[in-house]
Image (cartoon, rainbow over all chains, first blue to last red; front, side):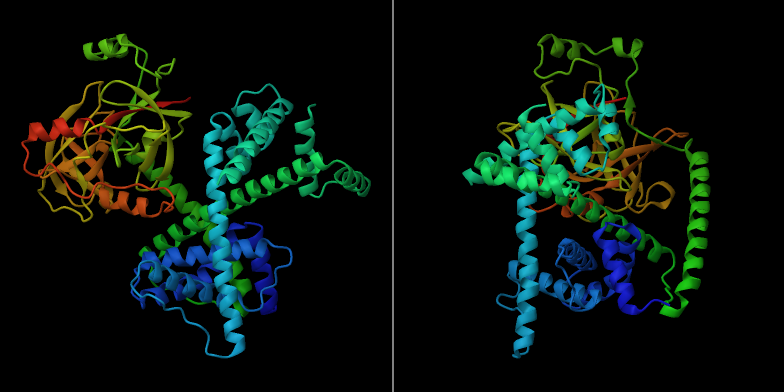
Amino acid sequence: MQHPLNREQILLEGLVANDRLATEQVYRDNHKTVIAWVSARGGSSTDGEDVFQEAMVILFQKAQQAEFRLSCKIGTYLVAVSKYIWYKKLQQQQRQPDFLPHGNGDEDGVHEDRIYEDDIKVQEEREVHFEQLNLALEELGEPCRSLLKAFYNEDKSMQEIAKSFGYTNQDNAKTQKYKCLTRLKKLFYNAQVNK
Amino acid sequence: MSVDNKVWITAEAYLAKNLSTDELGLLEIKIGEDKNFASEFHDACSLLRSLNNAGSQQKFKNNLATINQKIKEESAVKPRKIALSMQYLRTAGVAAVVAILASVGSMWVMEHNSHNNTSKYSELRKEIRSDLENIKQSQSRIIKDLNNKANKPQIENKYSGTGFALSNDGYLVTNYHVTKGADSLYIQTRDGNYYKAYTVSFDATADIAILKIQAKNFKFSKNAQIPYSFANTKSGLGTQVYTLGYPQNDAVYSEGYISSRNGYLGDSLQYRLELPADPGQSGAPVLDASGNIVAIVTAKESKSVGTTFAVSTKAMLKLLRGIPESVNIRLPKSSKLTNLSRNQQIEKIQDFTCVVKVYGN
């Protein structure tokens, strides 16, 4: 029988590797708690799903970092982050201004609060960054946009790409990919500078 | 091999940790000596990291969406769930394998059944064949072509459907099955111009795709706002409805009523309509008398004339809510058609409907 901590570790590793089954297990273990929690605080079940999925993405990104160690159980982390996301949403909708649950006064609680808020903030910045990257990709035009998306988003091999984009061989497709990357780099960093 | 390629090859190998100790040493020396290379290399690495990370996050999000869908379907079938404690994991493993086999089995059965059903349900995208039909182009189309419209692709399109505007700046909606497998999408507006479009989001189950016209500064209409609004609740049985679509190159009007609040095989995302529709009308808006769009034409019953299925706008609004906020689609808030005659309504709507042309294999 697996040690429970071991199970957590295996699930996390699966999550990092984008493994469908591990992701599904973590999802099933926790989604109901979050949806029920959000539902009890004025959200719909769709709101609950959205919040939970955002928390999952944050965990996914956090776990990608080499130095990542989770100091609590996966479930505890997901529920805590979900709560912060929901409070933040309420605040943005100005239904409940200035209401973030700040610890219970003890040092430890405050410290944890900061971590969750930071994680959410980092993810928001990341989404903005990805959005800019996406804009640059759109600006690239075809075939570069589709070629890079096929490689980075759809996991197509250079061989498949060569075939579907009509390049005579893999090396030609690679050369094209590098050309596209060079143009993307210019677009992307110029946009960053002009911002 | 150009200098650019070399930077990328090195950066890719470096990130994949495929460089030997010697190569790493050389790289460090080069970075130390050549400031120009150092900054190029640094930018290349961070761009590649972002691309990889954005790609894998997208995959993760897709996984989440699939899992969510799966869980919802399960709970719709059997609401009871038995918790598994750790010591039963092995049994659970066996059970899972059995379940997977069983679901593959039942998928096969479903597949099998759906084949039997194909005769009853046919999607309404129109296949363009290069035979007489194509030659019998309507006069207006030929006149439009003579005007040599901008951006018309060189080759003929493979399929066509109908689309309609969600916002004046180029977001539109059509059926997912119209766009499925497309290499490229063009829309042709009322004035006959062609515009390239891409898919922003789609829901295969509900059969809805949101497209965006690529051209910057595109407007469906220079001087008018979208006249219709979208119903966010399901309309009742017997509601009089009409549709405007493009089974040919001119807009075609047909009218009917909601004959059931649920669609094909009881699909609650759909309506069943008594309203004649032809191939090419997929994606056409279905409006009620006061100019609210209640549904989107998607398919018809093959064996009968006049029974059509349409996806409710509720399903469409749900898909729209799932789109990131950064994609700013401003839906029309109120209908400007309420007190107009049917003729006037159609005249106003026509500027905001278009032909969706699909190119591909």
